[in-house]
Structure formats: structure tokens, C-alpha cells
Length: 361
Image 1 (cartoon, rainbow, N blue to C red):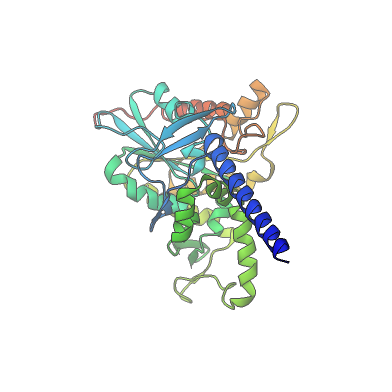
Image 2: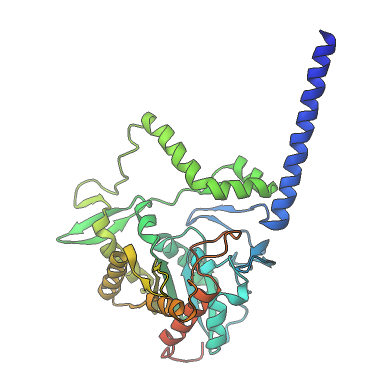
């Protein structure tokens, strides 16, 4: 019996050593080929932030890799430096942040080369929507001192606004005010234990990012039966015209957000729609058309300029036969703008800002 017990103990030790060696090997491979550990920090305004001056690996659209760094503002951009030209601050989510390709190939860098009279600042931040982008703008206004703001939104923002637990106030047939609670601390920013694990392991970071939505949904389904108030939306002030946000409110809420963006700076809203790319080099609006119409209506109501980039993306597809979004199967980032898409967007923005008045800062 003692020999059998010793044999089992030796086997368990071998299995443990094998598993540890396997985990170390996978960790090395993930760090070498995919990404670095995450060191995100909590932020009350937008939920989480990249660290300033952080080094990271970029997966390029041609399945290559290059190392980059965030600047002192925790942005995927060079340091703004002294202000010698008028500045256009580009605010948006991962479509603007553009970690999917080298920095010099994103539409902000391309626009800067096409219009050297303007300084373009990349204010993109993954996971934001128009509501949280407004909070992010407030953080960047002081250090950047922009002369104009380009707000880039995409079709995914319609669903992300629904997740913000917005309450709206109706004044007649239209929404005249809205309220949203502070964004929850997301991902590694939400738990000290998760922050420590992701800060020390690229493998944990990769798994958390890849399966975050699935795990979040599974956890929500698990705790839902135990939370009697889970289905009750957060309302700013029950009664007095306040009610939960509905799908029909998106145009009115966007108009209110656009007005706040335009309160201090000239604003241009650029929409990256989700298009369906057919085999005959024709791109169709698909199910993105209703949201595109709502964005256009919000721009008109807020009296801000709106640029729908659908035509630019469709023309790029018609000329090249290659969709301007998505990457190879072995590169994460499918659905984002690829190199062709960034060129198309930069060209469209060069036309949109051609008449921007030039003056000394």
C-alpha cells in the first residue's frame, strides 16, 4: 500500500510539473506572439484607462508585429508637444485607437500627412460610446487644447448606448434631458485580484479579453434569479417625465450628446457604418441603415456637421475588391478598419476638413 501511495504521489507531482511547464510555455508564446500583460487602471469617468507610457505589441494587418507605446496621456499617439498649429482632437472607441495596425498607417496619421496645416490628436479609447466619449473629451480638453473635435462613431454604438442604463426625460414628443450612472469599472479595472493577474500574465489577459463578453453574460444569467431588482432600470428621478431609455430615443439622445460636444468647440461627427460586402464588389447598407438615418437626424437637430463614411468605404471596396474592414483569420481585430479602410477614411476626412479655417493657435 505504501508503494502504491508513493507511486500515486509521484504521478501527481509529475502531472503538476507538466501542467506548470505547459502554462509557462503558453505564457511565453502569448507574450511573444500576441500581447503583453495588461496594466489598465480604474478611471471614474470611462471605467478604465491604459497606463501612460506603456509598451505593447501591435498586431499588424499583414500578420506582422511591431512594438509601440502609449504617450503621457495614455493615448496611441506621439506626444502632442508645443501647440504650433490648430489641433483636431479625434475622439472615439477602438476604431480610432486603432491598435490593429501600425500607428503610421491609421487614418489619423494619414490625415496629418494629407493636411499638415492641422495637428491631429488620436483621442481613441477602446470600449467607449458617444456618452463615455463625452466624459473622455472632458479629460483631454485641458492638456490637448483642441480647436476642433472629430467624433467618430460606428454602428456598434447603438447597442452600447443601451448598456449605459440611461434614463431620459420627455418634454412633449422629444427627449430633452438624459441621465446615466457612472460607468462600471470594466475588466481588470474592476477587481484588484483581476488587475494583479492580468498585470503579471499575458495568458490571463488574452483569455479575459477573448472571453469577457461570454463570461459576463454567463455570470449575469447566473445571478439574475437571485437579484429581484436586476430587471429594474436605473431611473434618475421616477416620475416628472423621467423614464428608462428606449430604442426609439437614440436620435434624441445622440442630438443632446452632440450639442454638448459642440458647446465649446466646432464638432464634426463621422459615422463608420457596418456594411455588407458582396462578391460583386458592391457594398450594401444591410441592417445599418436605420442607425445611419438616426445619426443624420441627430446631427441635423444638433446643427453639427455629419460625415457618413459609408460611401468612402463602399468605393474603396468597388475599386480594390477587398473589404476595407477585417483582417486575416490569424490576426485579432476582425470588423475593425484595416489598412485599406483607414486610407478611405483619411481621404474622406481630408475632403471634410478642406474648408476648415486656418488661423494661428
